Image (tube, rainbow, N blue to C red):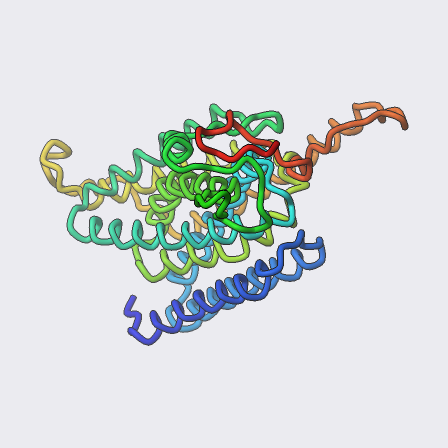
Length: 361
């Protein structure tokens, strides 16, 4: 696939432009987006991604067009799974709903930069070392097994701080309360970071883990660096709006983890088969290519991905309806916590007040 420099430049410019629209047009004024606003912008970003795929189909043919759509759908599905973690982070740090857009957008921008680096490194590794396909395949098969064992997501899970966050809290003085949408604040002549900045670091470190899964997955569907980059970028754009659009449905997608396990396992097997076809490891078939197993065509990959997501979604929603029908309605006077928007409660903290933090009393 021969992509001219101007096409790369135009694509990157368009992606940066869409990010600037989000930064300048949506998150400058903190607010919780309405369902209509989220739906309109989500549809717009999906429409742009589909239009890009149709251009690939028109100029480069069905093979590359199919690879792009398979990659985009897979990355979008993994992004939806990532939203579960985002929900836990927002709830764990008590991020007010009107500030969540800013955290998400900064996190998405960081993820895009990080994945671009991973893509370039991965493309260079594939170009020079065919055994990398074995490594990518092993990563996906391991991830698929972990997804299948997880059995989905539980709404009463708690987000656990990782080593990066614990180190951040020890090194940097942190306030206990939010200060509008500011990341840092000066109090008593000292500079402190706010819980909003800590939540952003949490999403950023989670993005590193997400990239380890997503990049091998899409390289299992296409080795074209341009398509890998575009599919990742378009799957991340609009993720902020998607968060507010479907966060009420996340707990209903009870079988999503199993569906993603099937998809990742399928792509992992596809990578191993491709690695066998390009094998150069001396301890595998004497260093010779293994051609007895047919390669998995793009159309079959796309069919498996779409079919798995359709079955998973329908089965999840059906189970949710049965579960709701099986529960008697609560008494009118009962007070219940909101399971869908836990972060709309008063901001809370996840650990004891760090040394040096200003007292709120």
